[in-house]
Image 1 (tube, rainbow, N blue to C red):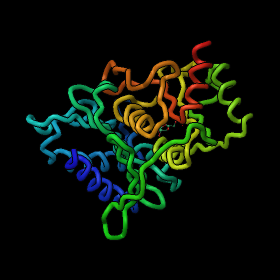
Image 2 (tube, rainbow, N blue to C red):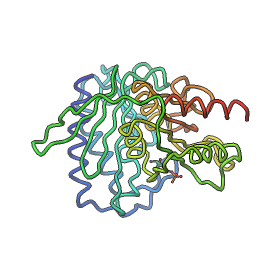
Image 3 (tube, rainbow, N blue to C red):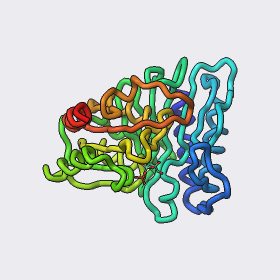
Image 4 (cartoon, helix red, strand yellow):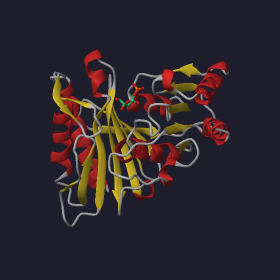
Length: 280
Ligand code: P6P
């Protein structure tokens, strides 16, 4: 597994360098989920693929930007699901974005996830790797990722990151989100999953939600390379991750780009979500 993390670090350095003066124009193409693809999406995907395919322990890769799984080493054992540049549409307004990785063995269900990682490309380039613990690193001028600390979520936090289009929320969901604001939670939502969840992890907790809506009953975020990796990370950081009713890591995608409603947060907030969703 260490050689996978080493490759992720190398990919992070190369992607962060390309972001600096990247062509962020859109292509005519869309990915299989219907997202408009930027040239930078395709470039980031190529960089990550080129690095991961040289890791002998990786059997295949599944990318948000690829229609199907790519076998890279017949004798490998890990399947790496990744979103090469999540939130890439935020680059042209200079907001933080990220890369997300799930390292699976034996399948791509939540239970098959063995480790997870993400990179935040912001004022600083930071990396979080979750195995048995959640470890936080920062890229130094030397080109090394320096270990900073382990990440733990408090039982209850202060931040609320409510995703999706509010006019399409179910009334009970709106009431739930409003109840957190009535309790004094602070709104923290940039539209970039990686920095929005990184902030909750580092600021001690709260709730990130991307719910089912009237128009999108399976919501938007992809299980294999967005939702499961963060569910793994939040659970290892002593928080919780559910679809409203069950643990996200108990789910199995119907296909590689399948989506699910998702809630990530401290234990107290996740229990409040469960109570409301159990009644609706
Ligand atoms: P909305 C970015 O496109 C993304 O996939 C995630 O990074 C982010 O959490 C979500 O979509 C934002 O979606 O509908 O709230 O703008």
